[in-house]
Image 1 (cartoon, protein in one colour):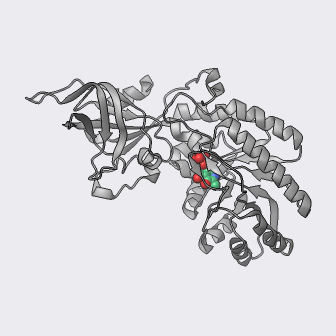
Image 2 (image 1 turned 45 degrees about the vertical axis):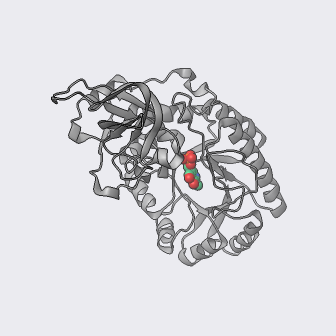
Image 3 (image 1 turned 60 degrees about the vertical axis):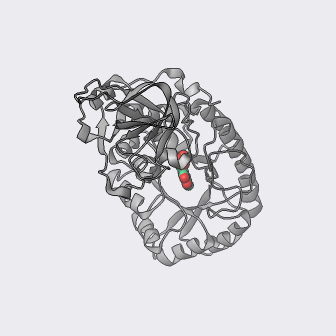
Length: 404
Ligand SMILES: Cc1ncc(COP(=O)(O)O)c(C=O)c1O
């Protein structure tokens, strides 16, 4: 944790904890570096589902080409906060009300998930028009990745054969402009795997478009850029992705390529800071019970990983008994919930961890608070803080680290 954040955390009272602390200069610099690594012709959307915190969205607005939203709620939220930013509205199961709102807001792109959804859209357009991408689920082999959303039977997008009915409907309705295709097949891919997938998808898409006489102006290849929670300093190799995309685009001079990452953009700017309430030993194994838990930070439970953390020692101890502590041993960090699933990190070696010490979980800026089951057990919600002190510089080679 950098000094300005540590300083902020030092000023939080115990009652302020747990706290989410967002590092806006780090976010700003990270987003700027991502944008700089990508060719100009690649449009960068931020997937708001990863974290729709207002100050995060406003910070990102200066560095992205728009936002991807996946619900009427996200659509209204993003429109209100960053009114001018282009929006792509995707996601399965859009309701009639949500589609009508998207038409009313004139979102820049609608990602159509099924023939039924397209038919519903035609009933809502009135005298308006819509620019759509058809979401396709290509049967590709994705291998071992964190989260597979396509390539096999799934509720996301359409099988290639189902696109033809959509083409007929679009051909008969001049209010609908088909701009191209959308895919989001997996999350957790590294740059090389992303590029191979994009190449495969593009080859298929061009053949498909050629056979059907479709002008394929745009391809949105989704998000899913890998984030490695076991190696917090190994960032996704944006430089390699950018260089590879430039090579691909050189072969396709008229195509606009769009990506919509979420996790890899905001994961690193967020910290979940809490405090050790108790240290217990069960059959010789050490457990640190923390304020809060997975009802605030569900990420490690959802992804089945150990959330990386730093210990911030607090030497104050005024109780008249020995301070419970674990020393040079593996400790399992759990929350306050009455479930064995409330584990933030399993058996991680610590030098020293004492009741009253603070623990700052890193990489808590994406799919963290907003995917957590806040109401369970009615514990108080965390407090939220945004540190926006200085321009920080991230070493130039940071974006050249290939994730292993
Ligand atoms: C359609 C779509 N686009 C983008 C994303 C963002 O993915 P990630 O946060 O892994 O980059 C998701 C995540 O589920 C998604 O479903």
